[in-house]
Image (cartoon, rainbow, N blue to C red; front, side, top):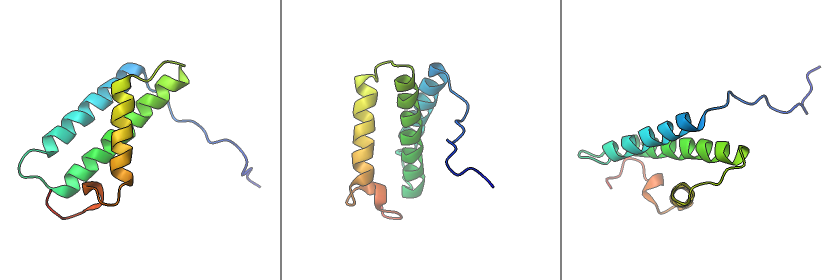
Length: 97
């Protein structure tokens, strides 16, 4: 019988350099998706990926007991607020910006 209380197996750890590169690439992708013509679905996908990699980077910093840089912290807060606001473009699929 499987043990349902076993902790999840953590994924492979990322180096901070890899995390920083992922964030840089995701930022570039969001910027590229903002160029004309804007497709809401692709921009939304790029924003979600940016938020995901930023959270991974912040988690890796925290796991190493390092401070989260203010710019990363502020950008995370902004993206999380946009995502949670029902009136934001984050939730409007198929509508122009």
